Image (cartoon, rainbow over all chains, first blue to last red; front, side):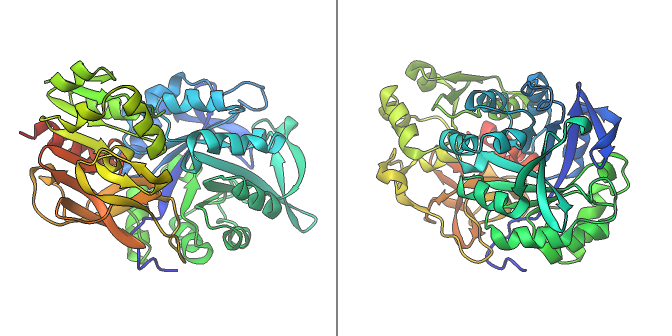
Length: 261
Length: 197
């Protein structure tokens, strides 16, 4: 789809999974390896032309604590692009702390599943533009269903919600953006889950971010062209420089996809 | 040079302060009329609703103080909107420094509101505030209401409709986007503001 009446750029979003102050990455949410320091990677991506960064404190929810926000201030000091913080934000006060330290958005996942009213409370207090809902989804018996507590494999749980119903509900509650983590594709580098993302796209008119499965630059072209997502998020291919962001953006632009160069 | 950032009640002020510090400025975050009046530069940030921000400025007794400022003033995002006469967001009377009324943006096929993300602007006339910027710079926008295009518009942006992205009337400047989050182009705009005479 073209956006003749707007030059709004499609976003490229490196995702930094943070555990104990370091950036890690697993395969299908397991077997995490250390990828580098938070500030080092944040600075690099910002300089390379990333449009936004997402930091997931992946241990925050399973450990029952909220995000340790000291590093949030450090990130805010060094980068000049927007960033979003996720992980264990359970209340308006948790969110306020992260936003006051300089985050532009907060993203909630497990706490929203456990208490959906939290979405409404955050939207009421900070506005839809600040409130992102992350949805971890996996195909089970032919139906996309959501998972919670995905940060620690042994604690991962079903939620009893189908993915598409849940996405509709969170948008009705005021979420300003959806990040759909397709767990079947995560870390496999075989491409984004186009079919699932298209199904989600048809349901909602808020920004939709594709997550899980990016392996090469063509996967990004595919997901923007075929699923009409607003942004694409990836970790491994950026961390190991398999897909350098400047080259990726040149390729997207050459393919006719509007990106910020 | 002294730089006052007006405490208008928004949550996310950290990023503005950091951006200015990266440019070598030493901003003071304040709601004291004397500090604001005597600063060399004044910044009016703002996140949230127009009504709440105007109520806060009124409670702080800052409405007249801001209107009478003679030094360069920069309104950012909601702060720019407050420079206009009125917002249709809860029918809020604003500072009335720049003529015009803020309207809610219209969503349509492929045009999502809030307007959130990176977009380009098109300049309408040369101004020191735009010095050294490319023809189509990229800025980061997050808003649902927008300002009409008028003689004080320095640059426009297109998202469904065209609206004023950068304005200047005498010493009063405004940016609808977040220069503090707009990478090198945003930094250049802020640096230009710090150098205005």
